[in-house]
Image 1: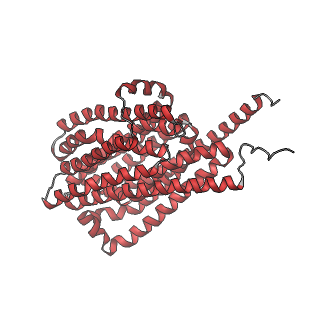
Image 2: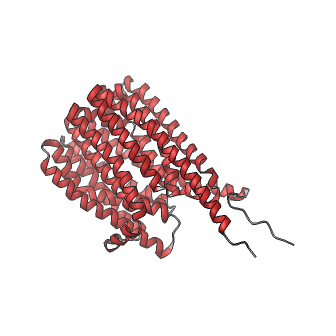
Image 3: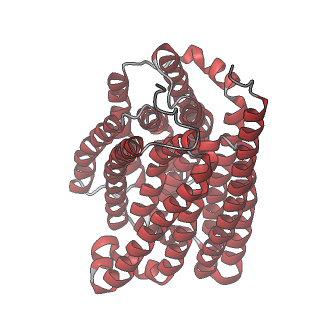
Length: 441
């Protein structure tokens, strides 16, 4: 008597489906919890800075934060994005070697960029220079801490990422409290407190993972991962570089206060933005599982993810638009809120477009379609810079925010076009591989 039929690719038994859904829900739960901690921590710190510092000092803090985002994208592109794509199911010595090489690469990038940021800090006058010098001191620790989060999520140990971010938050709270109690009015001190707490969490990450970054493995990591790493580096730096260029242009054209208003709007949308970024740590491996089990469902899975993020963004935006004029704005942002609120609807609109981009971007990451994601990023960021800088020159603060919103929706269309093409290519490759496989005896 024959046994049960073997499952065919793309089909899953009911019990297997239930187990898959439960596993995914558990991993997503860790991702949500971790990102909630990270989001609330950064949100609280930025609000404390906004309420404490002058608009000019807050603008200087914002420039340092944008520069950190640039470095973070460079580190992720070369160090941790390839880890997520290629080693999320590796085990044993293979995984340990990948983790050691990936985290050492993140630390090395932090050291190199810290030197560059330090030189810029020496050259810049006033508050901006002080913020950049402070960032140079803490940048290696910030990038190493972020790399541990990728390590833990790629290994389906999201609980460790949550613990690591809790360590960061616990170390950050007393530092910020001391600055507030002593009446610190310099953005540089807040950058130092924020980065020093991250460095402590980075050290704890070494203990949690039981793996030391291996500086000697950096060259090998970069060489073996260069096909993905270089494209992801270009993609990440294009995004962060466009944001940096926009912030710098707004500062030149409209002044540091305008940079502060732009950053304040981004801070208000920060919880959903950071959740969006954090969930990608969990969703990319989940979509990779969908690719192995039911590849035709990849676009649907990405669409559901994008719509979930867009719905959360709209709900959060509605809360802000209703609550800020009723006292929350002044309580949260102080005097800065009056200049921020008029452009907040445009920030919400831009975030919704970014949510839809994230859905497609997660699919392209899981498919390893680095060439297509890079193309979407480069074209999208070119549009972003043109519309935001042109908007600032032509129409001031409202113009640059409207340009960002328009660019986000144009970018969403670009990303989804590339995802559909990548999914078709993957399906053709799978069909060709099946046709060329030898028949079973």
